[in-house]
Image (tube, rainbow, N blue to C red; front, top):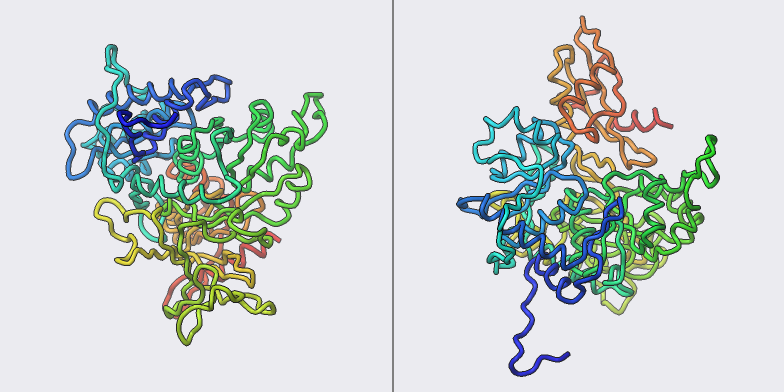
Length: 549
C-alpha cells in the first residue's frame, strides 16, 4: 500500500534492532529464530522480547560515563543471546559479546577494559567472575537469565539516533599485547549488509533460512550471520555446538538455504559416513540429500584447502563461495560472489562499496580495485584489461581498505582506526591475478588463526613462561587440514626441569581458552636466534610445517 498524504513515512533503520522492528511489522508471524530443539520465535515475539530486555537493561545499566554503558553478553548461540544483543542496541547501550569459554584471567581483561556494568552470562562464566569481582568495580551482579521484572513495560526505550554511535565492542587480537576492543558503529554494521545486498543474485533474502552455527560472540557469526537475519527479515537456525552429523540433520529438517561457515565445518561434513555405523545407528541423511535446500554456501575466517572444497562440491553439487574480512570491517571485505567465478584459493574481489588497494612495504601502490597502478602515474584505463594475460599477477602488497563498514578505532579513544582519508591498513598481504581476483598470502604480524579465532603467540608464550620449569618458548601457527592453523609451542626447559608436555598442556588449559592452547608442545635445547637475539620465527614455522608432512 502506498503512503497517502496523512500517512507518516516509515522511520529510517539506524540500528539492527530497528531492522528487527521492521521485520516484526512486515512478517510478524514468520519465524525469526529456530533453536536446535525446534522451538521457534516469531518476529513479533522476538521484537516484544527485545523491547522488554531493552527496558530492563536500561534500568540495570545505571548512569553512563563518557560513553553509553556497556553490556557484556557471554552466552552460547541461543535466542537469549539475540534478545540481549538487540535489546542492548534498542536501549542505546553498547554490546560487548564475550566468548563464554574464556578463563577468569581472560574475562578479567575484557570486563575491566570495557568497564562493563552489566553481564548476561552462563553459569560457568558467573562462577569464574565471582573470583575476580574485586578487579571489576564497574560490574553489577551477573545475570544468568535475561532480566524481565514483573510488570516491566513492554515499550521501546529511546534508542540512539546517531548512526555513528558505537553499537558493539568486539575484542580482537593484535600481534602484541592483550585483546583490543574494536568499536563498530551502527553505521558500520548496517553498511556491510547494504554493500553485500548489492551483489546479484542476492546472498541472503527474506525467504532464506540461515545456519547460525558460528559463535555469535565472533564478528563473523554476529553480523554476517545473526545481523544478516535481522537485516533481511530472514530466519536463523541456531546451533549451540557444531557436530557434523547433528547439524547436518538440522540443515535437512529445517530446509536451510544459506550456510555461513568455516573450513572445519565443511570438511567435517565431507568426512561423515554415508552408511549406518558399525553399531547399526543410522549416520543421518546422505550429504547430497541433506544439502538439497542449500543455495549458497559461504566459507570464511580461515583458508579452505582446495581439496576440501572439491570434496564438498563433488559430494553435494554445491560450490563453496569464499569470503575474507576482519572484525574491524564488520566483517566482510571480499567474496568470490562479487564477480565472475574465481580461481581456487582466491578470496574473490572487493564487495560493492569497498575500496581496496595493495600497497608495497615502501608505500608504492601496486593495485587498486581491479586496476594495476601505473608507476608513472594513475591507474590503467578502466576499459583496458587489468593485466597482460601472460602476467601471473601483481607483487604481494598489504591490503588497505576504505568503506562505510570500517570500524571507528579501538576502545576507548579510537586509536588505530582509519586515517583522515578513511583508509585502514589490515596487516594482511595479498596479490591480484590477471583476472583481478585476490589471493591472501600472509599476515604482516604473527597472528595465528584457529578456525577463524585469533590467537596471540605472545599471550600463549606468557602463560607457558609462567611455569617454573620453562626457560623460554616460542609459539607459531602451522598449517592444519581442518582448523586452518594449529598452535604449536617449542619450549626450552630449565636444566633441572622434568615437566612433561601433558603437564604444560594442563597448565595452559587452566589459563587459556581451548582454541588458544597448543595442540602440540615440543621440547628443544635452544631456540634459533637472529644476530640481535630475536627468535627466528620463520625457522621455527618451517620446522613445524615439515614435521607435519
